[in-house]
Length: 70
Image: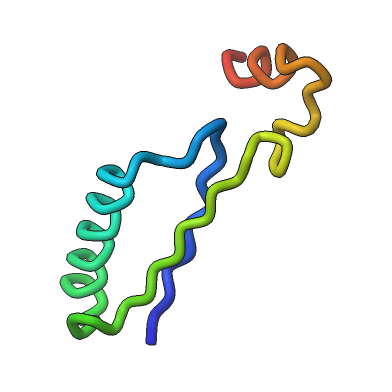
């Protein structure tokens, strides 16, 4: 049984509409490309706050923003 695990880093969790759209597309891709039967794909979406990922390197938030913009 295939499992797709997604780690989403951001201040807020992705809106439910975006997560639903992602799930629909993931199911379609797994069916089309890998031949996964309907209902067999397991999808897990984890939300990571910035301090739970590379955002923890920024003391006041400006360091992370500067790295992102180059």
